[in-house]
Structure formats: C-alpha cells, structure tokens
Image 1 (cartoon, rainbow, N blue to C red):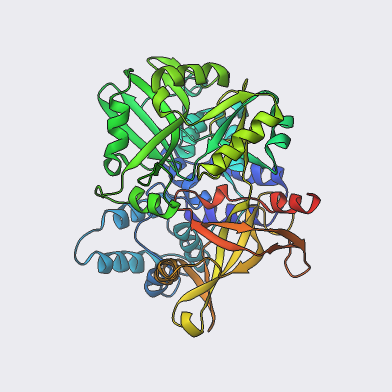
Image 2: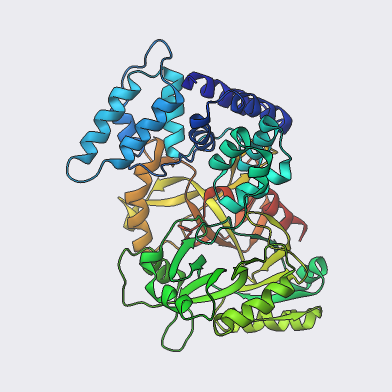
Length: 507
C-alpha cells in the first residue's frame, strides 16, 4: 500500500472528534493492508514504530529533509525498511549514514509524506488514534470481538502483532493468545483518590499496600532463565543482576512477578528516586544496589493467575516471595487504611495503593480496582516546551510548559495535551544540564526564547492544587507546581488527564 493512503487516513482521523468516525476510518485502512504491512502501519499510526528509537531527532530530520517530490511513490514497506536501516546503523560514521539514508528517502516523499515521516519518528502523531481507538478499529476490521482483541494485545504487549493475527489468523488463534513466561504483558494501572478512606469507599475490602518511590518492574522466570522488564516493556535484565539473583533463589520454577525496585540507604530507607533511576538506567552494575519488592503474581508453575481474585494471588505471592513482598494489610476499616498510609509516609514512601481484594489483574488497564493515594498531590504531566533561562540559568533550558493528556478531545485535539501551567521550581543543575542537552533533540519548532518539543517526555510534578483560569484551554492552572523527577519509565500515553486535574476543583 502507498504511504499516501496512510497519510490520508491520519488526516481523516485528526479532523474528527467522533470516536466512531475514527474507528471506521482506521478499520477501513487496516482491512486493505497486506499481512506484512499491518504491524508497521499500526506502529506508524501510534507514533511508535516497531523499531523503537532509531537515533534521529528533529535537527537530524530537518538537516536531511530536502525538496519534496511532486507525486506519491513510497509504500508503507519502504518506510518500514528505512527504519530498519536507521536502527541498524552504528559505530563511526553512523550519523552520516543516517543523514544520507534520510535525505535519499525523503527526496522521494511528498510534502505531506515528509510531515508524516517526521511526526511518526518523533512520536508526535496527534491524531487522537490512541491505542484504545486503534484496538477497536482492529476488532472492527477483523470482525472479532473487541474484548478478545484487547486481551490479546494486553497479554502480548504488542498491538501491531495482535492486529496482524486478528486480520490474518483464525478466531481460535486469537483466542489462544495468553500469558507466555518470558514475554512481558502490559502492567495494570491505578486510578487516584484524595484519601485512603475515599479509595476504600470505592473498593470495599482491600489490600492497602505501600506505594514505593521506586521503578516498576515485571520479572519472568522460566527455569533457569530470568528476564526483567520495565513498565514500558523494555528488557533491562543485564542492568539488574541483584534482582535476577533474588528471583533465582525463590522456591519456584516458572513465575511472573509484578513489583518495584528501589535503592536503600544504610538505614534501610529509600534513596531519592533519581538515584534509583540512575542505577536502573546503567548498562553496567554500579555501587548502588537495587532491592526488588513484589506486589502481584501473574503466573506460577504452569498456572495462570490473571483472572483469579487478588486474595488468591496474594496468598501465592506470600508463598513464593514472602520475604520480598511489599508491606500492606487487608482491611475494610478506614482507620486501619489511614494507619497503613501514615506508616508508609513515615517509612519514606510515597503513600499507598488500595486494591479491591476480589479484583482480577486487568493488564494494561486503569480502573477503580486499584487506587493510589499520595498525601501530596503529584501528577505525571508531559513537557510541551521549555524556555531559555536568564541570570544564573542563562544558557540553560529552564522553565517548563506542562500539559495534561486529553484523551477525549474535550479541550483540544483528541489524544493531545492541554497546557496547564509552567514551572522552573525543583530543577537541579543536573536536570537543567540534562534537559538543555536533550530537548533540542526532540525539538519541533523554536523561537528566540522557547523550544517546543515533541510531547514524549513525562515529568512528575508536585502541586498544592489547581485553580480556575481562563489563561489555559482546560480552564485550570496548577498552584505552586514544582518538579519532583523525570519519569523515564513512563510513556506520555499514561500521563494524567485534564479531567483528573479538573476533579481537584471539586475537592
């Protein structure tokens, strides 16, 4: 299929706020794709090419982009093959090789195709074609039940391959997609509440567990082989030998565990999140040691536990990894829940997660079964731009423009980000240096004082609340916002929503 057809579909999807219209347009495209075009096309539509990052930023794209072609000739397969070549380029001279490849390829692209290629590589599609919409489109195009497609995508962690199977395989093959030890699944997510009592009203009897100030991990063991994945499903096994060793010593042969890892100081208290992430991101072991803590178990020795109630999973978790279980208590009493929350804070942790004791593990979904509670309001927002500093910060990118996800398009583009404030507070010299080096790599445009970037960088922001404001399209502004940390472990599609922030007005 010509790349132009994909561009036309993204334009049609971006031009409507109707979810149904988006699904129909995407389904029409998917139904016409050849089998080997399906997974690449899904990646392009989401701004998440199957090759991942290929070492090309905005500046590299701009420098390589020449005059556009007059007519369309490129195919989806051509673009996929280009990204393979870009991803494989390495070593001395690789930057020049990438620039040459891009220049030769984009010379064959029309102006609209050049824009599409740029947005696909920078993760800035802004069509409102979030994974939920595209998953529904796959179900429509393949004439398969939506819940079956969603489950297959969640358990495989790969919507592109799920789409290929749904569109080219049998119903039985799609139904058969399940947990595979060694293949990561999308993690279950938590909603938020203002207090443990409010959370308990929603869940009923629940396991109230410490919310650690660490990094999410998913650990798979199949016999002697152990693999560790991040929340974004990246394999980091070689970076966390101490986690591997803990799991190797558990009394089990096959297991999938969900949890967090963090570094501790000499007194056993958690070190700052930045230290954990610095160690977490190292390609070689460092002096800082990471400790794993587990809060769920998805599979054990041939038995899948996803659909079992949390009470059953916790019993198995205690048997398998009791010494490495995250602290918590099962209760329906608000006073007990509040006490656990206070204990977590006194131990240096973020707060608690309140989990309905009868709930299954809903991979990849955020619902009311898990509810996180933090005493200080913190939200994961997306950096939209950064302003050049002045005075002591002259020469550094400083003040951040912050956006909240708008999944429905209530205040702008569906799937886009609504600006809710700015802040430079909490930025250390180390963070200033990092963002000054990094943001120009994902720049989409700039002025004398501001660099606008692709909305792919998640930052955790602490606030005292929100207030009504006509300055921003969402009708609110952050109060006393300050940076806590960058969330390298979290994709922008999981940022907090404008609706969540607006709910603070009612509180």
